[in-house]
Image (cartoon, rainbow, N blue to C red; front, side, top):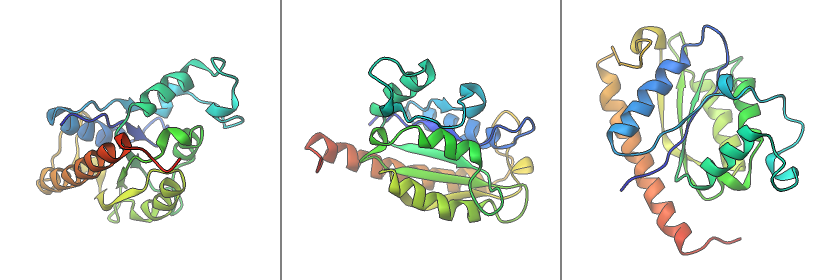
Length: 192
């Protein structure tokens, strides 16, 4: 069953390595027959949040927000790729997520966290779980942490770490299960 799963990248740094993980996961989702558009804050260039999408009068939101709202409304799940900044999520990720709310409701999310060190960004995943749940897109139980991302995936998104394909396959299987289950349930209605 084909799904729409935006891959939301959290870093805008000029030398960011997270784009490698985003490319890897986008390719893996597409290989499964899913649509996996990359949501890249470096390309969106959204200003610091002043007004949420829903706070603009209909048809007056900036074009990137209109485009994201349309994508999110037809999405089945969200895959968030986050670095770890000071034991938390990058500000660009928080800013990108915060523009929306209702568009996320009743859809699962999944977290791929990474770092250049040995912990794989897991300290960012914990606060991110709370944020995603509060936004109405609770994360699946599994994480995909990628330690030493700079050597685990090459710049084009090809894994060089042998364990990564197996771990990513299980992770994406779980996300697809939740996405299909919640899509079926959304079709029968939501509490509000």
